[in-house]
Amino acid sequence: MTIQEAISQADQLRPNDLDATAKLRWLSAMDGQIFTELLFAHVDAPESFDGYDAQTPQSTDLLVAFPYDELYPRFLAMRIDLENGELERYNNDAAVFNRLWQTMAAHYCRTHTPNGTARLRF
Image (tube, rainbow, N blue to C red):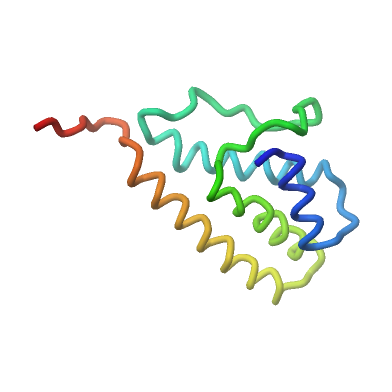
């Protein structure tokens, strides 16, 4: 999923007046968290993640790929609800987002070698 696709899907889920710059900043923070807390702890992680800014092309792929990329529009919808003070919706979105995050993280940890370990050879 690209930056533009995530923002577009979130805007469809939660029509809003928020600036795209704020949504880009949220996506940057989300991918920064994904890189720092999950990817970086594994052998085949990208070398670095420097975040997204106004000069980042909207066609840039986000770090989490299909089929787990649904977490991005859900994350943005959650943040939009928080900004709008819609706490009941925020709590519902947070529950959905947390389930998506846990599923994605569990799959990643099962399928990638952690740093500091060697693969078993028989």
